[in-house]
Amino acid sequence: MLHKTLVAALTVTAFAASLAAQSKPNFSGTWKLNVSKSDFGPIPGADSQTNVIEHNDPVLKESVSAENAQGKQNFVLTYTTDGKEVMNKQGPRDIKSTVLWEGSNLVVNSKFSLGDNDVTVKSVWTLSADGKTLTENRHLAAQMGEADQKLVFEKQEGGAVSVTIPAAKPAAPSASASAGAKPDYSGTWKLNISKSDFGPLPAPDVRTDIIEHKEPSLKASTSQDGPQGKQEYTIAITTDGKEATNNAGGTELKSTGGWEGNNLVVNTKLKFQDNDVAIKSVWLLSDGGKTLTQNAHIMSPLGELDQKMVFEKQ
Image (tube, rainbow, N blue to C red; front, side, top):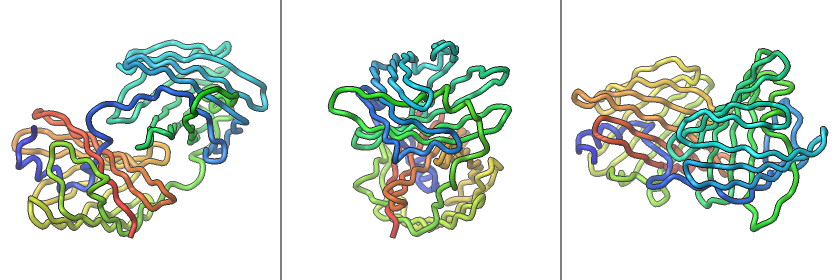
């Protein structure tokens, strides 16, 4: 358990939020693609798709049945979540993948060749709090360009259907940058304590963040009160990967922000006494822009922990 002073240092950062606590989620189930909720960007989308996932960590097997303009496809992908590279086949194509946990999100990095072009796909799997929605945010990169996609799957009671082609299809036209605009986090956000999970760290009694977001600049002004007393501070970052230095409650923070699909990822470094502390925070906007969830993984020589902070727009 982290020392009380470190607790104070961590809780004052606008980034100390993280995906649900104790155990990793299990993605097992039959998942049907919701085409209307998905965003395929510049790449032709699926007509239908069903993935049957068997997940017994660290082994995960995904059986895909897909249909699109090119016809039907059925294939099986097998991964391990320990970062070891695995080889799968999708039709005639060899796909090399590594899979790792980032907090409670699963990150699948794949690479394959399309003609003479090398293609990479980074897919971040996020399971909703009720376990009924699986969202895959993908970033595709090739010599011809880059593209983002969001695939939204809904858990079925049982059965299967047919649908698109994930890895191979996305890479084909390898279009321009991301599909659609990035989310805007601007607004006044009040922390919902009951929906948040601070793990072993004490929760504040109240907290409100006022965010001004004008891409690529983002400024978050925090006012909170709790066991550590009243605290007010402002964090300013950019989303283009440039390092920014801020001060929160006497603690110097060095942060970089960047986009992973439509999620903002903020990596922050600070020193507590002589210990290096790293915080990775993933910002998720949901409910039509009314809920902001910040999932953070905190690492230091004193241990690791996860947190989740849920804010509601005022």
